[in-house]
Amino acid sequence: MRKISLFIATSLDGYIAKPNDDLSFLKDVEKEGEDYGYAEFVATIDTLIIGRRTYDYVVKEIGSSHYDNGERDVYIITRTERPQKGRTIFYTGNIAELVKRLQSEEGKNIYCDGGAEVINELLKHDLIDDLIISVVPVLLGNGTRLFKDGRPEHMLEFVKVRTFETGLTQLHYKRKK
Image (cartoon, rainbow, N blue to C red; front, top):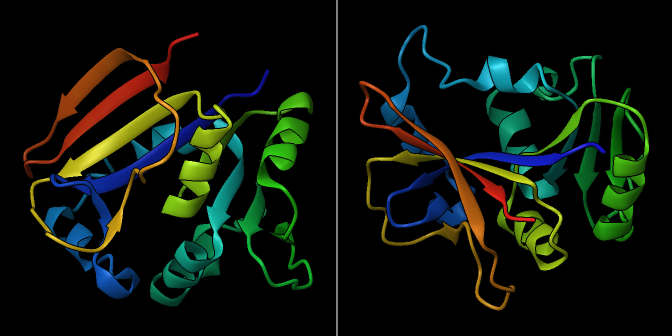
């Protein structure tokens, strides 16, 4: 069965964005030639699930080809219907049903790139198998929290930790079965 993996960065105090969906704190750990294992990770996936606000921010800052490169299906979780663009599908249905359908299909793993609403909905249904969380050495004090209150407790199993020259620490856990 296809796994769902979260691969995301957070501040040390648990925020994935500053107020107004601002991800500029991630630039603090940018280093030429260092992708923090991203290329290796995306080689294991062929489907992406992402919230509309995160998608809009990345498209504005980087461009739509960051997600829709023609090699994977991209599901944008949204409340507003929009026509499909290439392999990018704007999905307005039940996210748990989508994930269960995708997991039953043949293919590589599935990547959840946020945002917090999508992540917490998947956690509520116990659908995230791997959590790869890069901790950026900054205390933001405010913004969008990675983990929201009101979701069930999840026991995790430690896989590995990686540290980088920039001060970023990457934690990898998997869901205990």
